[in-house]
Image (cartoon, rainbow, N blue to C red; front, top):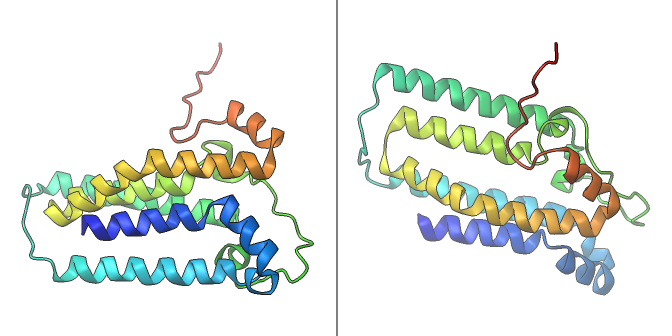
Length: 193
């Protein structure tokens, strides 16, 4: 399962790289318009493979969750789903999934800085982290722990590469946004008297 997550996260970062996109756009413009759809389908298939692998893996407990631990796990996972869904609302899902190819490349992507993106730069990752933590607290299994550890190992790398792509794509706009909004954990604002 660790190798499966390693493959999934490696392909996620490699296929999202700006350099690869520029090469494909220059060499195969007619195929490039379907790049996002290919990326979404491949990611979905790999993720489904991991889910199937997790379902057939023998269940071994790391700990037996208490009622309180399970309740907390459900609450954390629900919070993660809410963060994830609110984050997706700010993005054009048709473009994100590649269902709306841009034939002439006229439409430039816009930097999203509204909604959840006013609090953290990577709310989708934050939502995923909460979902994986919640899943581990509810199940207490080795499989859930592997999922969580693989995500924790990948997050700094994924954020690093995604930030490089975003700086290359949006330049000064993204650098300003970077200064104002934290990458992962929202700032706790103190009210002044």
